[in-house]
Length: 266
Image 1 (cartoon, rainbow, N blue to C red):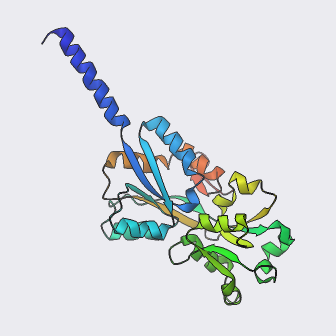
Image 2 (cartoon, rainbow, N blue to C red; image 1 turned 90 degrees about the vertical axis):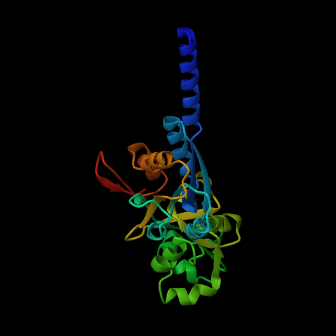
Image 3 (tube, rainbow, N blue to C red; image 1 turned 135 degrees about the horizontal axis):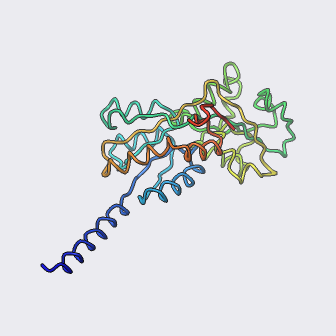
């Protein structure tokens, strides 16, 4: 083979090699509270990595069940730590990859046309008011934010008094939609979804943050069915970057940023 031929062959190999890197794909199963923050994170990751990310959103418990049944995901981002921990314990996730990537909090949505004051919303009196016929929460059977709504807001004996008003959504994003559409009068949802531009600027729906103590810690893990472990590791690792943490913080999540070592919640 001549020198020119060898050079051309090397160039072709380099192009094909680069193409294979760019063809990397990370399939992510993500909790519904990440619906508005993930597009920004994915864009930043794809720009720097050359990999492609596809996202499937759902209630953490629903995604957990799908993964147990063999759903082809590389990374699972849950709204709690328990579901990814269970996958690791069951051998369905790569050992040592479980990490906390953010902490979430609750927000109370309410229909402005019902005339409630912020004081009424903050005191939880809104849930007992006769004007409130439906209270939307994510189904606590498979949604961490639904369980948090009952544990931290609708605490006994309040829960017993309002349980017949509850409108259970498939996930926290749907609970948000129920209030926005008028199918529910009040909703207990994630702060991250309540901060979405459509709700934040709405004249129809009011938002009052209801921070959790402790916050709802959210975890991610790499699944053992991954077809590209390196790309999956790079994506999960990117969530620890200052760039990703700033994006998460701007959408209402609490994160620890190394540069100031402060826990910040919007």
